[in-house]
Image 1: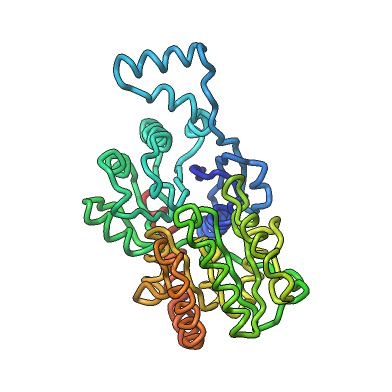
Image 2: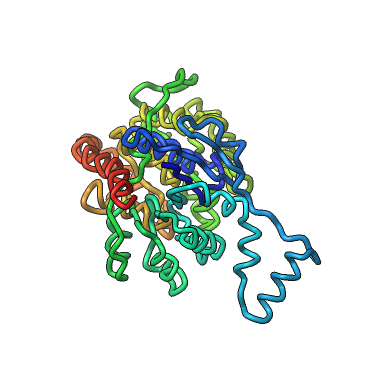
Length: 385
C-alpha cells in the first residue's frame, strides 16, 4: 500500500514537520504494510523525519516564457479560460508520482484557510483521474474560507478528516457526507528532552511564542506583547522562554523573538531558544514549562498534549476548534483583533495562572479522547481502501 503525502512546503515550519512526523508514525503503527512517501516543496528540510520510505521533490516548476508549454498555456487560457495545462506543468513534480501511489493525502492542515488554491485543486483532479484514493488529512476550514470553487474541489475527496468540531460541523452542513472528526496527529507526537539552558527555572518557566503572521494582521500586537512580557517580569518570579516554531524566510518567529530578547535580556529572566531544533526537541522544552503562550498552532498543541496550561494567540478557526474540543469552550483563545489589547492579554495571563490546576486537570481528562481521535484517522483511511 503506497501512500503519498503532499501539500507540504517543508519542515522549516515545525508544525508541518510535526504533522508529517506524527502522521507517518501513526500510519506505520496501525498499518504495517504501508509505504509512506512525502512530496515536499523543500525536501532537504525533511530528512530529519524518520519512518518515511521516500521523499520526493514536490516544488513548483516555473513555465519559461515563450516556451512550448508557455504558448500552450496561454492559448488554452485565452480560448477556453482553462488553466489546467499550466497548473499541471507547474505541479508536475507531484503529479508525476501519482501513478505509483494507492492513496494521496493532502496534509496541509490549514491550506484551505488562505483563499483559493487552484494548484492543489488541479492535483486533486489528477489524483481522481488516475483512479486513486484522495484524502484531506487533519484539516481546518472556516465558514469564511468557503467558496463554490473550493466546495467543488472538496467533493472530489473520498475522505475528509477534520481535526476539530467547528470545521467538521461546517463541512457537514455543506452536504459533504464523507467528513469524519479526528484530531491533529501531532497530539500523539513524541518529545525529545535536551539539557535545559542557563536561566531556566524548573517548574517555573513560561514559554512565549509569537509570529510575524499575527503581527502583520494586527501591528499593534507587537507592542502589546512587550507590555505583557514586562508585566510577567514585574508581577512574578518566572523565567520567560521565547520559543520559535516556524523559521521560514519572510515568516520567521526567531527574528521577532530575538527583538524581544534584546529588549529584556538585561533582566536575566528572559531566554531565547535556538532556531534549529526539531519539532520533537521544541516539544521537549515546551513539556517542561509551567505555562505557555503561543501563536503557532502546533506549538500550542505541544503544550496542550503535555498538560501545560496555555493561552492561544489565535488567528483562525483551528485555534478555536481545538480549544473547544479540549475544554468544551474556546478557553483562553484570543482572536487576532484582541491581541493588541494589552488589558485582554494581561487578563488572560492572570486567568491562566489562577486556574492553573483546573486547566491541567481538564487537559489530563480530555487528552485520551483527543489522542484516540488522532489514532482513528488511520482506521477511517483503511475503511475506504
